[in-house]
Image (cartoon, rainbow, N blue to C red; front, side, top):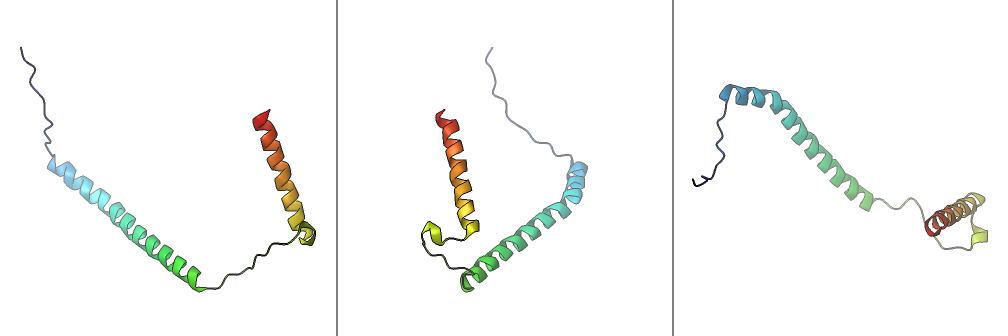
Length: 90
């Protein structure tokens, strides 16, 4: 006895198909509209961001010329890095 290959046959149930179409349509439409608005807003954001001047200026200075807050942040970061490295190597 030879084995016959099987193929997929789709038999749509039209009233379930219509019901699904009616229920899902508002969600699909809302999804595409919000995606379009979000993409457009993101493009506008990046164009405006390129046009506007930067709100800050960065320069390289010695550690002593940094503000106390910046010095403290750098010291905390260095301490955290040492702790992570000691856990990895230990």
